[in-house]
Image 1 (cartoon, rainbow, N blue to C red):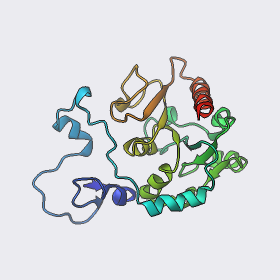
Image 2 (image 1 turned 135 degrees about the vertical axis):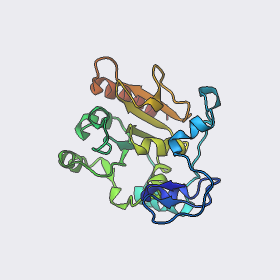
Image 3 (image 1 turned 90 degrees about the vertical axis):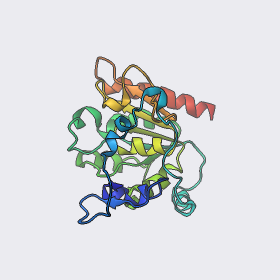
Image 4 (image 1 turned 90 degrees about the horizontal axis):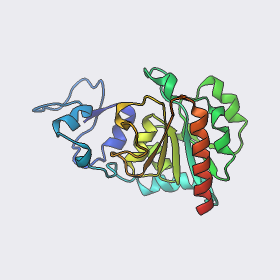
Length: 229
């Protein structure tokens, strides 16, 4: 398997992977065929009713999870991870990413919020710095293996359509994803669940393309989840 460097450690533990190499490696072992990972569903003739909907990433090492548990402290409230923006080079980034301050209604809910946001944008820095109620340990997220361990300590991940959404879903963690009106094809249309990730709930923009409405629905759902805890 050949993946981005930050994914090598994580993907090396996937069942069936003999060797995992970073993209750009100068030499590779002999192989009989190759296939882009995104084309495997076509090669397997996958249909909605044959999607292998189950966690496909191995659980993080117990010692890594325990290290993050110690950093997070007491588990006295629901722990909620947050990601509000993705890579700015993504062709649909203007429709999927949010400024941090738009999450303010969600932060009013009585929960423990944990930032999973890498590559913080300059405009978001003062808003995040002013929120002492959001735990920010992202300096220690050195690769996706560490992010997976932190996600495994959380009760819920709320994220826009970026890599953390797939990471959390692949680990079988409860995940809520905020989607633009015209989403990436993987999320299909007219449904609030995902055939790929049984633990994921989709919150879509309506025709207004207003993320404010999405945030209010997420806030209401989170308040309900906290009340039932």
